[in-house]
Length: 299
Image 1 (cartoon, one colour):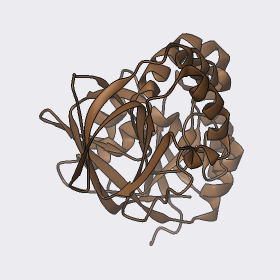
Image 2: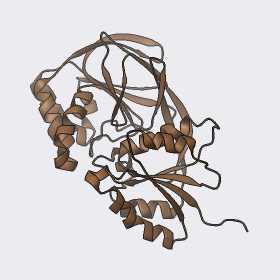
Image 3: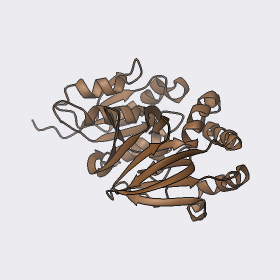
Image 4: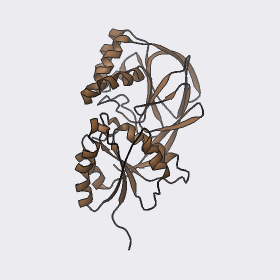
């Protein structure tokens, strides 16, 4: 008999959302199963476990992989799919279950209930990914690639996890007061420039952090990544610029350069940590190439 209802592999991060990952999954399981959807759940047990699970599991009969966690869990799932030895790919969905879910913010999916409603609509769309090459490694980014102040903020935000949704904003203000400046060579679609910056962030989606409209022109399927460069500035200039990130008007500032490119290279004068989709798992120098519409998502 032909199968009429989908079967989804669900990857649950039990420590996501300050330890609420299992509860979040249980809250959505009932409505999804009541709609005739079959669920096969697996919990992550260690860092990057979702990569190993999705890379190695038999996906025959699986119609999609759903993340219950934050952006980091979704990042692992996508990297598992993109590095499968058999090349098999299935669509990806997400239930917000982390302290940061900036990717879903752009789809107005703010709660697990929103995500269930989106999944039940059965819509799909193809999105770009960015292939990030550094050293001898490749990673795949669906959301952001950040360097400089944005990495400093991510590191500091870990100290404020108890403040959940506001931890990124608190960490941002803290790091703005410190203002570390970095120098780099930047190659954008083959055109090279030397610049001194507060930070660089390359975005596949408009939002990062919690409600920060960092790249208002970003489009998930346009074959380009939006590179925002905030040049060297005083603390006061940066503090004035920060609130404008929430409505996207910061890109009108003379301190901000905005590029839309198919590829770029980041070559600073020192080895530095890079934030990929909220994970501090890469270092400079690096090369980035956009892979147009290589992944389907379920919303």
